[in-house]
Amino acid sequence: MPRGEQMIEQDGDGEDLSLGARINRNLARMSRAERIVAEYLRDHGRHAIFATAEQIGSATKTSDATVVRTAKSLGFSGLLDLRRTLAAEVVVETSPVRHLHDDHVDGEDDSAVTRVFTEAAERLAATWRLVEADEFGAAVGLLDEAREVLAFGLGGSGLVARYLALRLTRMGRRARASWATGFQLADDLLGLRADDVVVLYTPSRLLAEIEVVLDHAHGVGARVLLISSSLGAQFAERVDVTLAAPQSTSNFTGEMLSAEVLTDALLLQLASRDETRSTRASELLISLRSELVQGDERSAVPKRKRKRRA
Image 1 (cartoon, one colour):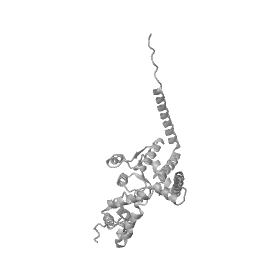
Image 2 (cartoon, rainbow, N blue to C red):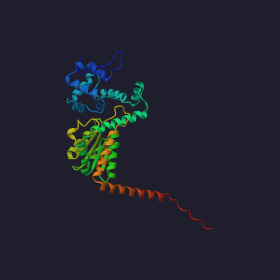
Image 3 (tube, one colour):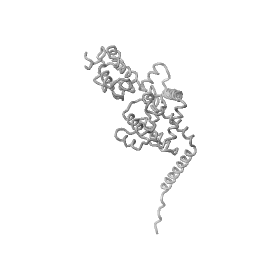
């Protein structure tokens, strides 16, 4: 069968095969480059769901054309068709309810609170083991020397980006967050300068916005701190410092748990470098809050009714 012709991959009962089954069936007749792409898709399904053909080609040191050919060799109409199948499989494989059920079948404690706290402890322990003193110190140094910090993230990552910006502002430092996509992201990037630092939160997905942020930061000379579960190696040459934040394998715990705890550690270490600034900012914050509370109390006092003249 010609390589470009679409194949319908099904098992003996007429059911569509999984991606892994398709790869096993077709691997022997695929070219070396196609085998490399196929194995990447099998081993890095979470990453590939949101990746373009060009990004997958870059990750596998092949080409976007090879990626498309691989998808067709596996019986898909194209990369989009492959990604739909892959996304459905990843959703099932990473379902926390399924993992909870599997643990119960295996005779383990199926208590939700047990599973969540156990995984959280394991993830944080793994994160701690991956923290290198030099890299962590360099990350704190970037934040300390920045004129302004731009924290960027999408989805759950965006929540942590906003958290970092809020905490830095409360410490008396200039910071802002962006979780914008499309044209709105361009507005957030306009003010970036050479003496600024971008803190990029991204767990494992390859997104076009990440590429734009990295390219613009490089263009203006801004430095970049990457906090990611698995993209550190891929972006190593485009960022200044990388901190690893391991991701959940079962989705019992939140996607950004490790990144948030790392952020707290960075903030604490940063505050210790300039306690005077942090203290003054904290005092001002308390003073402003106090005035706001008093304002609320004044507005809550009922007005006295005027007595009618007899």
